[in-house]
Image (cartoon, rainbow, N blue to C red; front, top):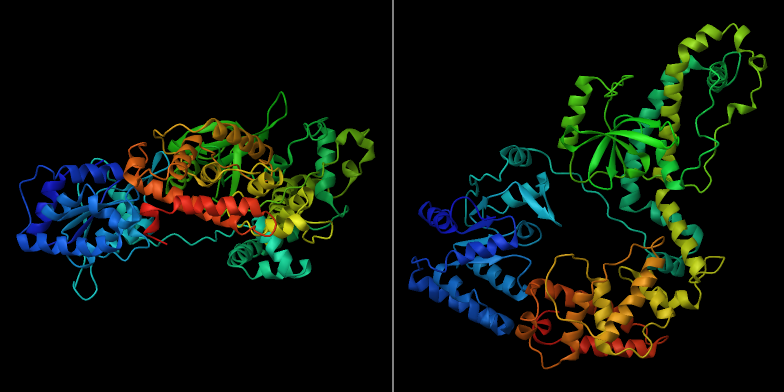
Length: 620
């Protein structure tokens, strides 16, 4: 959506106030393009000297990147002195815009927030027209880091004594979000360390198995896990102090003894404990679904208010506080992630299961949560320990509790002691999970690789493992299994490139594309079938047939120009470039298999040669 102030009027005001050059951040690519279109009928033009300066800079850039010579925005940029910069443009055009800004030739650039990170692109002024950003197919509030990145572009070192961050009025802007972002601390950095199958193979190739755990322990990911462990250990120490008054009495484990006695006294069995078996994932999470815990759901996030079992099926259920303050009763299986974040929750025995003050506080906490939270690693066991069924208790006479001198004390202290012990057990499990989660994931990868024959029983690389370790890209297990299944036997370069493009592409942005060949449709069906069979071990790619067909056309028809290809699809040129660049990266991995799969390596080499032409030759 464009800013509420018309783009032409906004740029004119910035010029009058001597606030140029400026970067005007908009919500989407479309908003940037619409802002540029609004200047097509503008009667205001730059002085001739500035137009000539823009022409000279563009001529210099065009010598290195010929693809921008026929760019449709050149006339507007040269005449008006404004440009657009977003991911839908070719890298060569973005380089040209950056060079124009660096030389002070432009007065304004309309850009998305992607410009704020990772590009040396300062300006005298930044204009913020939004407090949210489009991610996937929804809008989310800007984080403090993103807001500070935007504002941080204001002011050019050596040219400006001060930079200006201007917020324009808009019905789509939330000043509270921007104020908190400008004055608050940026979000913490979280490790994105992923233990992939190629990593496991290459580590086992270079190091003995017994040394790898110490290598993982030196990672930044484990460093952050250790920090979280230290916090839990401090809490655990406090809980142990709180537990000291509830030490051994007549019974060494009086808490368990009283719990079973109380159940027998009330003639109640632990509901569903012996009759119902939960899936390992759900069973492992149940221990952590306590009141006040923040959890990730299939859609969105929530805070647990209580955990219980349904009356009929005895299925594990949770009461959730969700966005907007709604309360939902849901199966525990709806929880997909357990976050390492809890809030104080004063419980009650009736709906809404917490005090009104607690509910109000939790609602505010839920709204204020940062976009990313550390996930609590939970170790999943295939055979969870099942508590003792009270059906083995025959009569109350089997217990010493009725005549025990500690009976009154046990009855009085049991609720608090049981709660504290559960907290201790929960913290101990969390600490164990944090300390061993990386190694546990590494072991899981080893088990899968052994099952598929890439490792032997002693975790040594097999012949297949030796070449599979060279495939160091996403969806590596799918690709190596396709190779082993001879899905790429005697495959033509256009087909190979098309399949690799469908595996590499991870954007669900809709559009229109050319049709693929019958051979491509058949091959993609086989790939999709294999990908589905690997779901327990590796997340499947999108496998879009339309982007595969676009790639196939580009490689198969060597007379097709880049402009001609762009006319066959609604896909933005920048997206096309990234698709092809990533496809070339995937093909380059296959090219390394000359020793073991010479035919496939040769086909990959020819596919790369067929793709590297026109725009794709301009950048490495």
